[in-house]
Amino acid sequence: MDTGIQLWIISLVIGLVVIGVVAFLLNLIKKTANDIDSTAADIWTQGKLTANNTIHIPLFLTKTNQVAGKILKSAVAIVGGSKSITQHIEGCPGCPHCMLQNSKDSIV
Image (cartoon, rainbow, N blue to C red; front, side, top):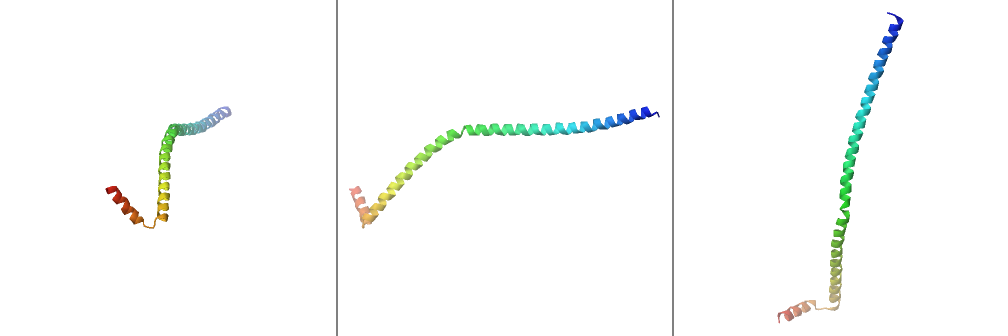
C-alpha cells in the first residue's frame, strides 16, 4: 500500500476512536445532566410543598395563641385558688369543722 493511503487509514481510525471517545463523554454528560434535572425537579417539588406548609403557620399560631391564653387564665385561677386554700389552712385550725359547718348551712 501507498504511504498516503496508510496515512489516510490511520487518520480515519484515529478519527473514529476520537469520535467514539467524544460520543462516550457526551453520553456521560447527558446522563449527568438528566440526573441533575431530575434532582432539581425533586428539590423544586419539595420546596413548593414546604412553602405550602409554611403558609399555614400563621393560622396555627393564632389558634395556638388562643388556646395558650385560655390555659394561662386557667393556671392563674388555679394559683389564686391554691393561695386562698393556703391562707385558709394557715388561719383556720378547725378546717374539718368549717367543712361540716358549710355543708350544714347549704342543707338548710
